[in-house]
Length: 121
Ligand SMILES: [Mg+2]
Image (cartoon, rainbow, N blue to C red):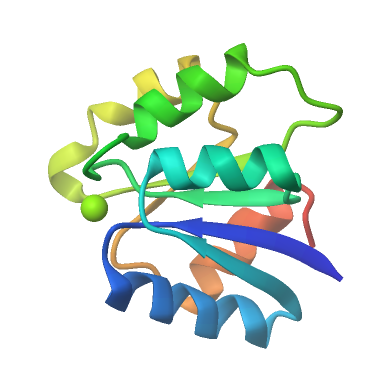
């Protein structure tokens, strides 16, 4: 079973993502900001990280930068989430190491196809 770490400061978004991912037979863990996510990745590397952009404490971008500086046995795939307003972030996120992006609000089909693109399912 593959693992996905859902990183979002919104409990509602985490819940929606969890519901979709579990329906795709993916095990879900949750983090509420980039720092929390980084700590969890250092403890156990997930197969994929679904990463929000705007979060308190540590943003998605800061998380990507820290992740690339951190020595790890394996790298999780990273799908970052953006809104229509944040579409300009895509290039910056990909340059910082994101593998794919998904627009919020996302549905099951969209998330499934992104997970296929990064090779998680
Ligand atoms: Mg947010």
